[in-house]
Image (tube, rainbow, N blue to C red; front, side, top):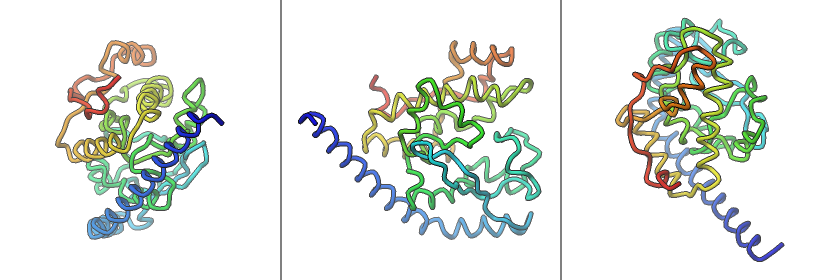
Length: 254
């Protein structure tokens, strides 16, 4: 191994170790701080629609290894986990509590446990369901080089993803040919050059977006995105669902 390769390997290992410490500290502290809120959500879920409190599903992890991801259940308990993998704006499967959890992204809180045990990271690509495992090809498989996360560029940019779904047409085809490639390209443009500082910037940006305190631009509002959307649905995505805002400073480097 050359000296340059050795230095690069050592730097990468140090960066990964620092990121793991960051994940453990932040997830543990967040679980402690948010426990009262999570307990209230659990009670609300049970009071409205009974058990189970949590929804779990196998997702693709780093290097394609499946792991079980947890969320608060937002669908009716009689809904199959093998149904449509996308949540619609007016999804009939949502409970009343589930609609609130979805809009506030509070259903994601149990993923802090996934971060704590090492299946996920605070910052990383969104973990896909096994239904879309075949999308990771033609270069997109490199997204799986990185541990999936709760926050990140694609999660922030697609905060209101369901508003982009077409009213007509094949939703799975739209996701596979329009949304997935767009999100994967966002991830591939960021994660190979990420730093711990830029991850922290995305953490704050993600929290602000979740709380509705900042706005964001969907990549699908551009000419290329509209063309891709029309190729599947015959219509451009609804631009009214997104407005512009700057990325964290680290992301403005190209």
